[in-house]
Image 1 (cartoon, rainbow, N blue to C red):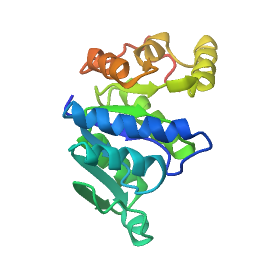
Image 2 (spheres, rainbow, N blue to C red):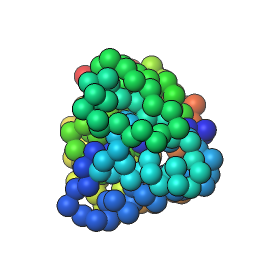
Image 3 (tube, helix red, strand yellow):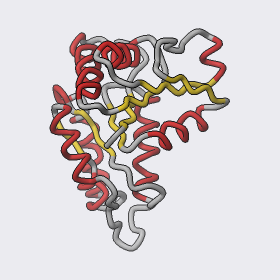
Image 4 (cartoon, rainbow, N blue to C red):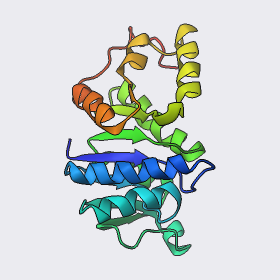
Length: 193
């Protein structure tokens, strides 16, 4: 893996541990020579992950729609800032430049982004692995809900098993590497609803 797209909040959230996590992710990606691809923001957890990656000598590719850049939300210090016209184009550019995707703490935007690339993988539109960094059990309620949805027959077990989940970044990167360039096998299209 040469690059990882990280989806995370543009705010700090209420727990200082989330900012520390974002900073540690940026540092570790840089230390391993993995390019950070992210939404291009300079504030919140987005700013933390980018700042720490840059400080550690890493490469950071930010992707942001022009309207957000005009509102001065962009991280001007990114190694490369790709400016696009829409959120759809933003996600497509991030997906194109990343070898894998991970979700850190975040809200609706984070969920929307990680679920979109995960559904694309399930449908065979790409073979890049998807993961949740579940530090402190942040994603545990969501993962429990996904297991319930799978038990109800709306997500194939293979799709759920294909999701990489770990409580620390080294473990998550290892799980993503194991899934690189392989696809889950949905049972004859079941669960593709």
